[in-house]
Amino acid sequence: FDGIILEVTNMLNQKKRQQIIRIIQESGVPAVSLLEKIPGLYHAGLDNYATMEQMVEHLIVAHSCKTLNYVGGPADSQENLLRWQAYEDVLQRYGIPLENDRIWNESYEVESGVRAFIHFQEKHLLPDAFVCANDFVAMDLVKALNELGYSVPDDIWVCGFDDSQEASYFAPRLTSIHIHGQIMGYTAANLLMTRIEEPSLNYRTVYTETNLILRESTGD
Image (cartoon, rainbow, N blue to C red; front, side):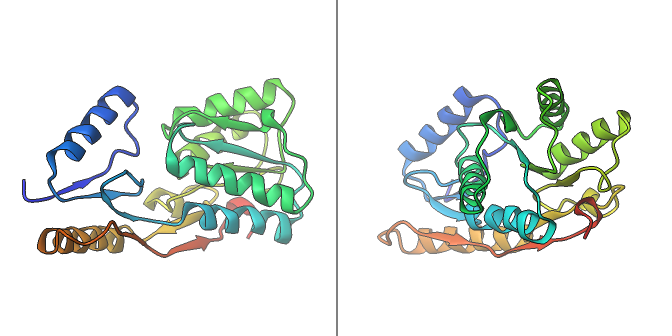
């Protein structure tokens, strides 16, 4: 290949994931990683920390949330680590105690939303708001809440991440973070062409803008 654009954020098989990354790194072929920073590769992504910071701060400031449970992706994922750190930092900034039992890191698969809900319910730790790693986890969590008679947003607020197409017509419509995927893809392709044409350039990372989309699931 003349160049490679790589996206391995959702790969559950970590051994295979590391194998693919290693092959690309050792090949010397110009490469750009989407979303996650990888040593030796250019990076087209988003500022996960600042984006999650905005979401959590909105729940605390605009809605006076005192308990917020975090439902994250893989515990060793760089993007999840940044979102998780932002969640913890904002809670500390507003004097809200950190409770490890209110944090669930598993995967971006839809089923992890239900498993997170079961974990919190068994520990009697249902919150004012659930902060979720992506929309599909959030939507599955809403379904689990509804099955037990809870109403979103009347009883509990839920927010997602990615602003998937489904988020806008789910009931209730889901508060989320909009990622400009087409712009990110264009940025990745542009970075790759730059890397191919000028191989001596130093490592670069370019963030794509995101937007907080407020909808019914957080009473907005």
